[in-house]
Image 1: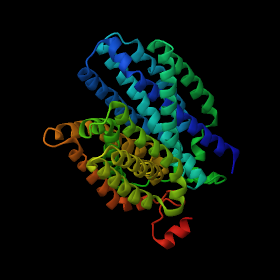
Image 2 (image 1 turned 180 degrees about the horizontal axis):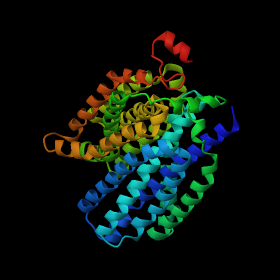
Image 3 (image 1 turned 135 degrees about the horizontal axis):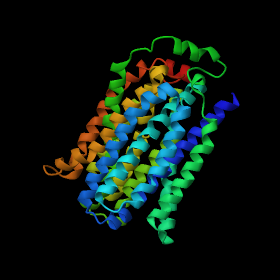
Image 4 (image 1 turned 90 degrees about the horizontal axis):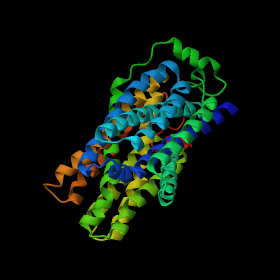
Length: 408
């Protein structure tokens, strides 16, 4: 395997870690920024919607730009912009300034999210085997690193502006150092050594696959809404429904995040053996069972087990959707990834808006049965991934024995 492809994979890992680290640093400092700016929790909630809106706009813009100019240009530019924008919330002096800062940070992060996922698809195409889940696992690792560094700097008494500024400087340096190793656009469409694949792909009209792409986007919306439930409600469920102490309740999200990260580190090998269809089908089914256990459990230990099982099941689902979208048409990989990622991000933002009002009519744990149902729907419709005819080996495999043996 060519050294350039291995270097491209390493660089992609670096950008996923960087994105997780940048956004994790912002999350760690949300309470201190809220206190310094002097806004209420309700106002902060509305301002966070601006972060999501900016991210969605960035995703929609950068997808076509990545197809036109190549990920080798858009990924470093987006990473530098995201690093620089991280400074702005730490400098905001009021609610309006913070809102503007979050729009810019969200926009830059949306650009980085789609462009680096598009490049990950290019690397995966070169390897001719599933590797997307490992990239997403490294994003989680970056978030964990950010929480540790943030806890240390807060303990040392560093100001928020100083920490965000230092993180931004490290981010810009990392983005520029990793840039030369990214794959050129013409190396993306085929396996290593297939020098004519790119030109042939560029020379023909792109395959029209809008229906399949939008179906993948709807699946991403449903599954990321379910993932958002763990982010927003897991701790509260243990505290309010089961009466767990705050320290114990925090373990719910920890259990979910841990199994999510470990699962993504293992998913690529599983997908190579049994195929993306099986990963989505059984992963979503396991996630439904885990969330149902967490929701209906009468005791804390079983609820924690449920959140852990939920994270394990969810871990491989979203990467398969992103990968299928990117492989559906090499000439429109960026645009297709932006559609799936964008609608998925809307789903994650919709979680609080959907579950919150439901709690006025029913207990919080009963409201969780909606995302359970969405996981079941995703499991039952998993065969949509078979339409990704350009996916690398293993991505079209069905869980039936013959197909599984061929994929392995």
